[in-house]
Image (cartoon, rainbow, N blue to C red):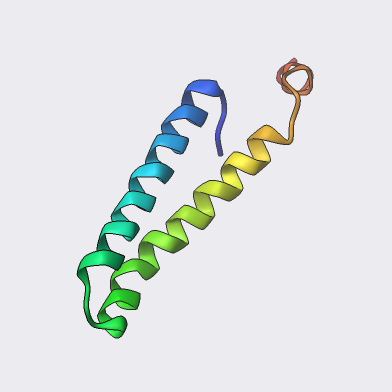
Length: 69
């Protein structure tokens, strides 16, 4: 779970890196089966991280302050 804006930015950077990796593999892997096998883990992790980002962004900072008190 993302706890603050610094962790948000790290997660967004990580998502971007994984997306670039998938894009690279899409361009260099000639065999579709190998491609799908190579990227499935990256795509699952991207999905998980995007859900974390969505959950963090769905809460207003004032709500976080209340739950910390």
